[in-house]
Image (cartoon, rainbow, N blue to C red; front, top):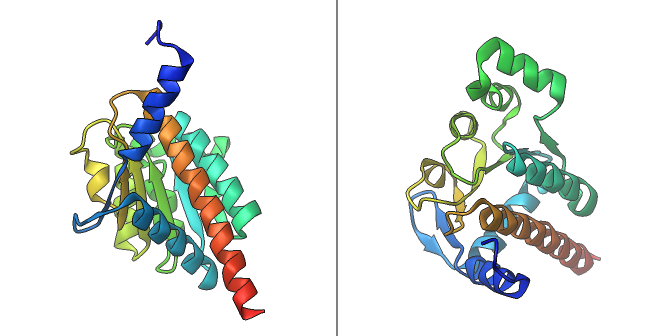
Length: 199
């Protein structure tokens, strides 16, 4: 990696992006185009039903989550939230353990017309897994973004699951960032088209 040229790095990232796998909750595979289209429609259905999108992640995935939350609010016009405010996050971690820091707010906030976007490079972070299960138990739909091992547990917990086939953080996190950027851009375009068709 250290001796790799930028052009080969970027080419490999492009190859990784084109090999992203999308599956539904029961394991059925979707094309990348169909999967991203379905994800955008899920976001817009949240807006149509006055629901909200909750986005969670750790570390670099937390940064992606915050960026997605901002774009959902500012570009798509969907109510969106993250659970990363420092005092609340550290209080939950101190009182109940870090594995509960997203589970508890998911139990508190998730409703049937909502959507949880769970981002984890490894797909094995216990706090992300717990939150996904808690949201699902409340009837909230779940989209997951994961990488590393193809049989990671998070990949089996979503209504829609995006898996990046790479064992390296840089490629997985970059791919997750691109996927979420495309999702908000595409949802914004679909929203505008629907509004114009009604106009």
